[in-house]
Amino acid sequence: MINWISKLFSSTKKENDTDCIKPKVHEHKKNNIESVSNKFLIVGLGNIGAEYVNTRHNIGFKIVDFLARKESVSFETVKLGALAQYKFKGRTFLLLKPNTYMNLSGKAVQYWMDKENIPLENILVITDDLNLPFGTIRIRQKGSDGGHNGLKNINLVLNTQNYARFRFGISDEFKKGKQVDYVLGDWDDAEKTALPERLEVGSEIIKSFGTAGLENTMTTFNGK
Image (cartoon, rainbow, N blue to C red; front, side, top):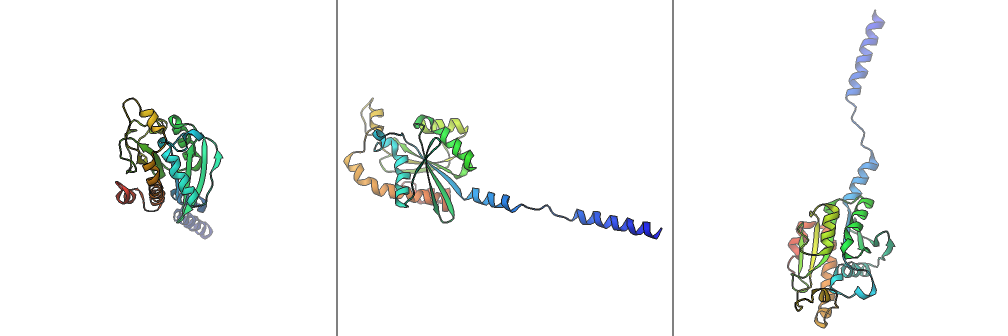
């Protein structure tokens, strides 16, 4: 009888001990969550080909190219685009130039989001904007495509408008019926002179987005 009672209390103690055991948090999962939050996809929109390099429509390419050169990182040809990796203050910035042409940019954005496990809030899309004076900056948390075919396709593929975009003004100084020629045309002499300083600001916006956050970046740079 004594042995039976002893076994009963021993069994009860083990059950109680088991109840107190906390689930183990796997360190690799914790590290993965932290690494994802510090990884950012910066998408410069543009068209591939030498004939488009210096056109207004390719300002997205031009800004990420400027940052890559400044920080001595190189682009590599990858699936659906060219990619450069830049590290700054514990953050990793993936600079992406889709090679799908502007109208199919969403395919590249979706692929690299999924491949690198980057959340929507860590994406910044850089594009030109006819509705803003040359060099004017407008950063938004979300919004419509505004008639921009690159944004239109990204919205369609991602099925959302809720991602950050950095619009760079190219103005609308063109005659009626000449919009396509204008956006696919080269910068004029005055714009070429002013562009280096604007590209410098653009590179700072990218770094601020990853380090200071979207709200602070909008406060600091919008309208500048």
